[in-house]
Image (cartoon, rainbow, N blue to C red; front, side, top):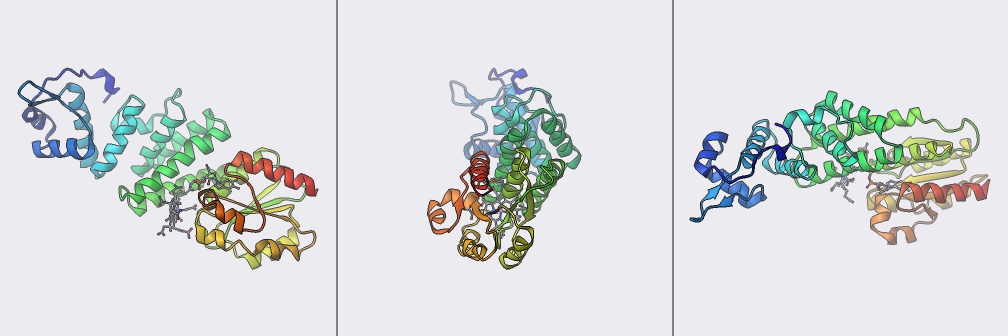
Length: 313
Ligand code: B12
């Protein structure tokens, strides 16, 4: 199927005809219309629905998605996104990175490929995005929206845990690739970045480490769910300039409350910083955690950290 605007929108077919062409029962057509506001066919003078070529193309596409195992609500979400970018092309679109597509469309294509478990297409989208966008755009306008959308679809039961894990594992892989490509300077007191105990959402911290390295900072990424006692031992050996711990979950954020005090016993004591979605969502957590809240965004975080580390150096 080509761009949706190529299909005529004159009211033409009755519900019976559309049902014959698409193989979707009239009762289902009416239910989709009512529940998901997919289409609003023209109404003739006697209130009968009249569908256009464009409506039929959209319905054929939805039918094809549902037949391939996607839930109707996910297919509708997909559809609405494609309609926003002015194109729907079913299975083929996810696989062909269009060289002039912006980050929003690229994110939508990558999301589609991941939803279909199509690793080859996802790799192709990611490769093309890495070639075309700067690091900030790639992290914040392609990968982050895909992850958020995955989270939303999982939360509303539109995708299963398997799809969510596959999609996030794919992006984690991309981020680890970027981490190893961006090394930062080889000497100097490093900044250690990792996640609070019990926190397995590691991609915010990972993106921040990549961001710091791209800014010329010597940053080391330690991973999710850190053990704070063990980390303190490593800090004692490595002598970092700062330790940054992130939390998405409020319960994990609470685990950080005593860590600055623990670090005070180490010489020279590093700066203790924290950030992440838990602190963004609930500012009271920032006040109750001894240490420095780095800020809500990576840019702000890097700036605060550089100032802090500069002061200590
Ligand atoms: C991938 C994912 C997982 C993966 C994580 C894999 C991995 N290796 O990281 C797995 C499967 C492990 C997972 C598990 C769970 N998850 Co989860 N997960 C997600 C998902 C889909 C993406 C997270 C992500 O990486 N986002 C991308 C990052 C970059 O975005 P961000 O965190 O919003 O970060 C922004 C800012 O906070 C800031 N920032 C972030 N970090 C940092 C760091 C610094 C230094 C700075 C300055 C700024 C900064 O900048 C970012 C860009 O704007 C989200 C959905 C979502 N909305 O994010 C759910 C989500 C976070 N998960 C959720 C839940 C509920 C869970 C589970 C409890 C599910 C369960 N019942 O088991 C478990 C908890 C596991 C644990 N103990 O940590 C909820 C959290 C709700 C809440 N606030 O409490 C979410 C929001 C899904 C949802 N819609 O409900 N999850």
